[in-house]
Amino acid sequence: SFRMGTLIAVEQGGADEAVTALKDVEQIGKALASEPFLISQLVRIACYAMVIEDVERLVSRRSLSDAQLMELSALLERLQMSGALKESYIAERSASLGVFEMPDAMVAEINRSNGDSDDPGLDAAKSRLGIELINVTGIVSADRRFMLEIMEEAVALAEKDTPESLARIESLFDGIGDRAFRF
Image (cartoon, rainbow, N blue to C red):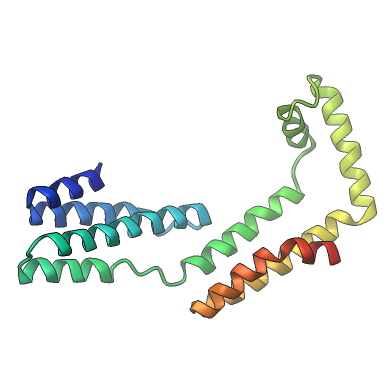
């Protein structure tokens, strides 16, 4: 709704109202700044992208005062997200480890939600047996180690915060299937 306020203000010539609405959208993104998970940072990026698009729309359609331009300049400076990707990967790595320690009942519930069975006791027993089998084979340990290695690489690349490192992160995740097969 804040974005709609910006669009309406731009179209109706209310530059001050548009700047205020842009600041409101920025505040929504800023509210997610301390959220460590990647999805929160992606939503933050989307909010900031809306601000940038609407600033472009505003400056291309309306004549602005020096004070309004200074406000927009300060607003755009506040959209910096240094370190957010690295922090998100660290949080995602921690959360991903929980998958390897998932209780039998939770695994059974996931299986049941996939339509496998309606018997919770049988589902839990099957899940427990399956988990024990893959633990014995070492697959779980290998998968955990592989996930940690990939995430460690992603964290190291994100720390550099350059376009080249972002391209390498994309390549890292694009090639994950091939690496997992070799692992």
